[in-house]
Length: 223
Image (cartoon, rainbow, N blue to C red; front, side):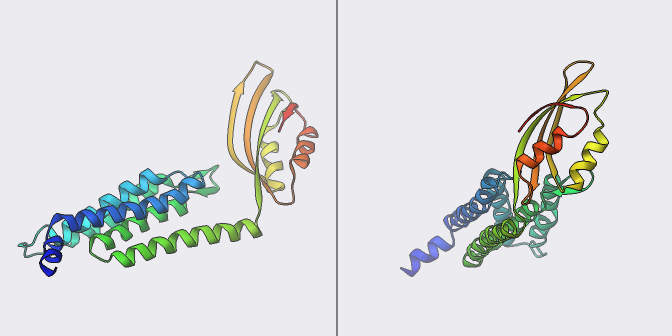
């Protein structure tokens, strides 16, 4: 039995098992992001987990006769993964920052996968469960105290009468966040707008409809 265990431990099978476990952990973290329609989901997290785990295995066991410090290679994963996270974070309208949690999740997924690659499998799995639990619990807590709802709004505006800056200021006054905005010029006089807005809990779509009806320059409204 000991010979079999030694054979498994000293073969590539052990490394493959670690990589598979890292991919499963990355999938679990990414699935939670996919469920919430975030930018980076299961595919991104699985690839990051695989790469980080493989890099850690290579660093720790790939240079047995090297006299230097091969673990320095693994240290570059922690800093290098930041470039991927920076690509996920973006600023909307120079005020609202999105993607921080997902970027932090990718960075932590890489570290968890490195731990698994180094042989700390139980620690990596426990940290995976802890991240998923934290993201789920904190999002529920935020939803409970700061409940919002999203609405899709279609507007036809009169170009000469509609004041875009006042329109944006009005939404900000009522704490209505624009999640997405598309405009299409129908003619010289009219423009079609499609908005996805995030409403605070004390503001219904009927309030939103009345707000737009009273605004000068809006011809048609559909919520």
